[in-house]
Image (cartoon, rainbow, N blue to C red; front, side, top):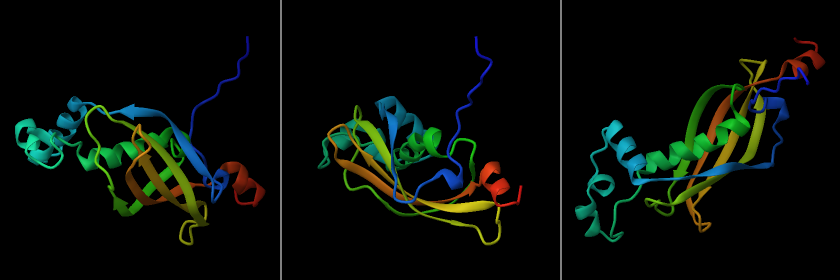
Length: 165
């Protein structure tokens, strides 16, 4: 029996390839309970997320999933593959859009494009990566997009190769 241990982690700055698209798996089916719990925990009293009778009278005809839950889940789906244990900090989000609604029972699928990366000027042992996240439902309809800037660790191996470890 092998003594080898493999620990799941995200990618280090130097392992991310600009222009590569990472497809995250598995998807996440969103339930009514998920939506109500998130919405009430975040004090969002919007009837569109909580009141089925009121929502039935809207153009959607039913409650919609809170868009902040959609955004959080989109980013969350990327963590295991990209940033688990290798991120230093989120630096910001921009161009967040929700072109189509999520409904109870929809399944969210995510992918991330590494849109750009550079070493940090103020923290040379770290790097800044720009992610472009895209979420689609089970029918392939884009339900959310976001640009996210993160500060990432550079691997010890890369630093050693540069003579900086």
